Image (cartoon, rainbow, N blue to C red):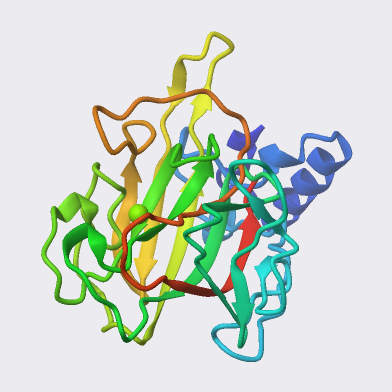
Length: 272
Ligand code: MG
């Protein structure tokens, strides 16, 4: 059908749109195929439908767009649970912030997600101590496959002036891919992660048919560019995939002895 667009008059194109819409084959009318005779009419390569949905932006850059699911707005952790036993999340909420409670462990969303855009803000406290992996260690697990550290961790750490293995610094996909650059602000200041997560796809027998990908901006700077993951991020050994279809998003209560990290303003947009 798309070959009919080549060299067509405007009215013929319009008629073709109507016809295909009526036939229920609307998708075919969206974009002319890049095959056959190349159109000489510039209108033949215009796409008019479907029109992208309008989202209303927040009043500030930090506010979520209208189609976002707000996971934490500073008031409570009602959208979260303790990862290990699904009991209510018990991290302390104060001053619009949720602070990691290392004694109660990781927390995760009650809802499960597949492909999404995620916004997270986090802050290493100004009184941070320690070095290497023991300095403001936390993490955002882009898909949680267990109550511990199972899943795919985007590292949270004080990497402003703190040497560690580079595939374990802030904005690394832990033990797999270092960030492209270090976009860290100093401790005491808020950091943003804006993430696009493409979940892995598994066949019925558990084999990976499409790997996971993560794109990450740290404080607005691209640090992971459609990075392919080799499997779940693991502290010891090689990454391996474990089949799942949808999963919670999880925040890490790392056991390092340094003062705990704060989180605020967390929202997600489903991309399924
Ligand atoms: Mg971590």
